[in-house]
Length: 293
Image: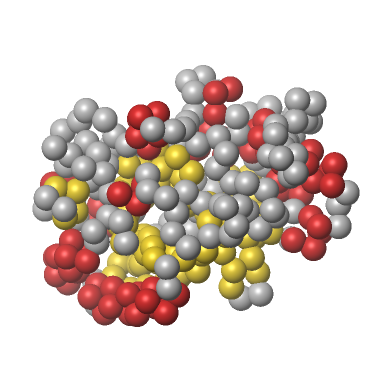
C-alpha cells in the first residue's frame, strides 16, 4: 500500500530547516540518490525533487514544472527553483545543524547545498504578525485528499506536490498600523481569529478563500516563521495533489485575476519560490520508481 511522507500531514515541529540543493555533477547522482533514500524517512527528513533534477534523470514527471515568476500591479513574485529541496524537522537547532552537515556530505559532490532557511514554530502555530496561520486547512480525510495524489500508478500514489516561498515581513510597518487596519489586511480579528464579514476585497482571507475558486483550490499549508540575515517572515509551504490550487491562489493574490492585489503585499514580499515533487514511501523508504529508480 502506498504511503505518503509523514511530514506532509504531521503536526509541525518546534524547529525546522529548508535546504535547497543545486545539481553539480550527474556523474555522482546515483550515489547521492542512494544516500538520500537511506536518510530520508519522510518525517524527520522530507525530500522533494525539482523538475530539473527529474529531467537530468531522464524522467520528467507530468504535473511538475518550474515555479513561475509572476508580476502584478506593483508586486513581483520571484522564481528561485532548485534541483532538490529537503525539509529537516526536529526539536533542537543543534541537532538540525549536525543533520544538515551529514546530509550535505552524503549528497556531495553531485548535489551542493546553495541555500537554507531556518524556521521555527511560534506560539500555537502563529505567523510573526501574531495572526494564526493555516486556519482554513482541511482536516482528516479532506486533508489527505487535498495534499496527496490518489489512485495512480505505482510510485505516484501517495506522492505530493509542494510549493515553497520565503516571505519577508516588514514587522515595524505592520505594528505601526492601527489594530483594525491590521485586521482588514488579514481579514480576521487578531483577538479571536474570527473572520471579518465586512473585510475589504483585498483582505488576504478573501484573496485566498479556497472554496471561492472553480474548481475549489484546497491545499495543506505547513508554513512556519523564519529569521536570518536581519530579516524575518514566513516560510510558506503548501502541499497539494497538483500544483494548480496553489498557483491560482498566487495569481489572484498578485492581482492577475481581477486586478485586486492582496493587502498582504503592503508589509510582506516573497523572496523565493519553488515547486517540488515529494515521492511516496515504499517499505519505509522513498519510492523512486516514478524516477526510473
